[in-house]
Every structure is written in structure tokens, then in C-alpha cells.
Length: 77
Image 1: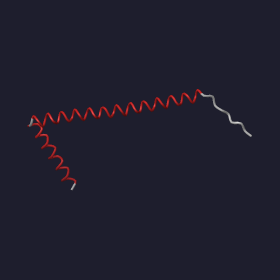
Image 2 (image 1 turned 90 degrees about the horizontal axis):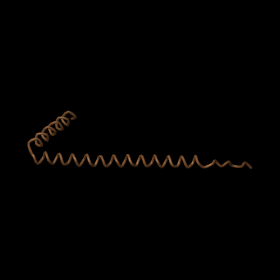
Image 3 (image 1 turned 180 degrees about the vertical axis):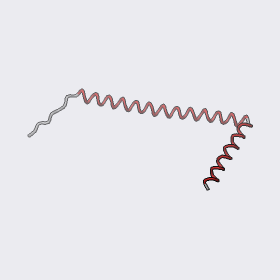
Image 4 (image 1 turned 120 degrees about the vertical axis):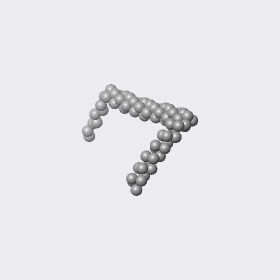
């Protein structure tokens, strides 16, 4: 069953590649879609990186504020 599936995927990929290689419209559509996909992935990665950096800087600020404040000693009764 898995062999038939892999064979079908391979035949579909080869057929799609031949279709794209022989058709200008399909080739331009693939290039446009690829450019859109790369742009979206870059935006998502930028958001994740900026979010991670913002969280790290906020954590650093909290740690610094906590270390700047003198520790309160509790009185024992």
C-alpha cells in the first residue's frame, strides 16, 4: 500500500513538473506562489523573533528591577 502511494506521489510530482516546464502561465503562477509563500514565512519568522526578543528584554527588565530593590527581611515573632 505504501509503495503504491509513494509511486503515485512520484508520478504526480513528475507530471506536475512537466506541466509547469511546458506552460508559461503555470511557470509564472508557480513563481508567484513561491514568492508569496517565502514572504509569508519571512513575516512569521520576524514576528516570532521579535516576540522572543521582546519577551527576553521584558524578563531582563523584571530581573533587574528585582535585583535593584532591597530585600525585605521578615521579623520573627
